[in-house]
Length: 424
Image (cartoon, rainbow, N blue to C red; front, side, top):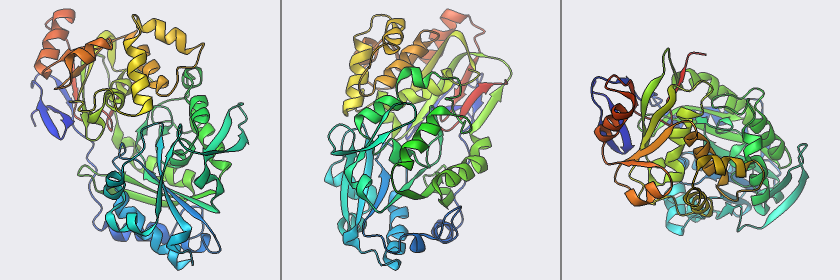
């Protein structure tokens, strides 16, 4: 197979002399509808949903926004069906789109995300940490305020729908995260995403046990009536490769254990250049696409050599992004002359919405050279302190000018679901 990296839905060829990590091959389940039904009816660590929801006067079903490649339209109808079996009417159900600090969704986006029929059946609202009305649910053990979207805070039962995949801070997404971050108020998100909090050694990709970030999310969620989750692992083609339902932590654990080994690839020696592909929808903004670079350079045992080059491939039609967190992320990087200055600033003062991502990218740039390949605005990319390349070949040539003609190159077809690191 000719080496390639993803850029949205495109495949960009990479020279055959490089080492190549193929995309994680997760096949579709033979009958995903039957598997979803079976998971709902035979849950992990919780009663069946129709039993759990019996007597509930209000139910909040939390789903991710469009920055997550989650098949919500396939997952929501069987959830609503079981709520109806429990005697919960459509009028008693609110679907909450967990935006975190991303922008709120439009009516057309809601219909596309949920499916036209479900979107018309039930009330649909955005949980957006800055604009929403939040309810204070007390304080966490670490001192952070727990502020939650009012529809979630007041619901008799909260159900989380989402995906499990590697996550830089939580270890894996899924479980309680849809509620604890997606529906939290700005002050709660700021506390959990403070750089000093995120710099703890156990806050790591693909780590659940002893991860302070994951523990904080579970504490936040415990202040709500979140009792049930329906999570999936997405296949190569965007279908369902795995599904589990029930207790949110048990669901997340099951899917992480079942699929985690497929996401992690280890190498014996470091590389001078790592080219990381960024699939849709993360290719649309620099805020999201930069995750691929941080997954490479901030792994427990980074596979790129000190001073090496990490490039992500994305056309960035939204530039830095169009939400308040994304906009502030871009402003912070643009206003910083030296990445080390932003790292130092993040340790002593709040950086605002999206500041944690700016901090992580700046931290990355103190150790490596970081760039983008694609059709994005070159001047914008360079104004943020990043290197801009039109093609992968241009990036490879740049690495060899700095590191010599024998520079080792690793191409990671999908830099978001393939975690590369050195053997520990």
